[in-house]
Amino acid sequence: MLTKRIIPCLDVAEGRVVKGVSFEDLRDAGDPVEAARRYDGKGADELVFLDIKASRENRGTLLSMVERTAREVFIPFTVGGGIRTLEDIRDILRSGADKVGINTAAVQTPDLIDRASRRFGAQCIVISIDVLRRGGGRWEVFTHGGSRPTGRDALDWAREVARRGAGEILLTSIDADGGRDGYDVEITALVSQAVHVPVIASGGAGTPAHFYDALTCGRADAVLAASLFHFGELDIWALKQYLAGRGIPVRRAIGSSVL
Image 1: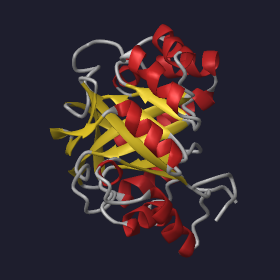
Image 2 (image 1 turned 180 degrees about the vertical axis):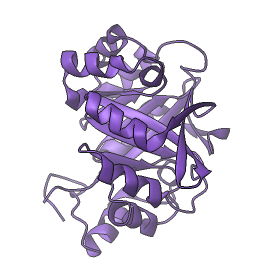
Image 3 (image 1 turned 90 degrees about the vertical axis):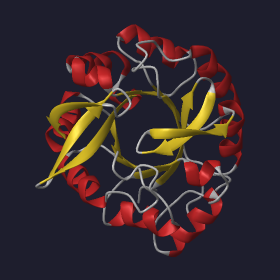
């Protein structure tokens, strides 16, 4: 049985880890390199590092920070923010990342997914999809750090990116982000059932039960969170013990055994 992954997310702006609500009102959550080192030692299965202002500011990801962070961790590491070309992907991977996360550029130039998957392998390509509930059973895709509507239907876009060669989807609910009322398990389940690639649920974690709901009701393959971990409100090892106690297969905080 495949284990479920617990993934802390390092949203970085101006060289610091930040966290807000619905992508706004950002507050400082520490140094990204130190945070990465801490999570690597506390049982995280992977890390996601997002330069959240790169697309808005029309610049590339801060490679020096990626390099310093990558030197401190020994678990899979995804980097996103401002990635627009195959050369950007190459530079990120050469800097030490295991995967790249693409959002805005994928929507603007969908065939970038095809080309990236062919050149670097689908396992390296994570497509981030930020969605906002629009009613009537519909969610709209947003780009540029959740600031620009696209008119695209989230479910249709998820199917397309999987078909084009995405190896994984990072699905974030803008409505739920930072609210701590739980993941949007409805859209998570819809996307998870619609595609053949792993789906990471993001946005809204507030309690251990929310992680369980995303992995069961939402059918996610992994769960991502930020502020709960950053501000010391939830320990990853304690979360894994809780999930294991409810029948969810997870890796131990130390070593590779399954709980």
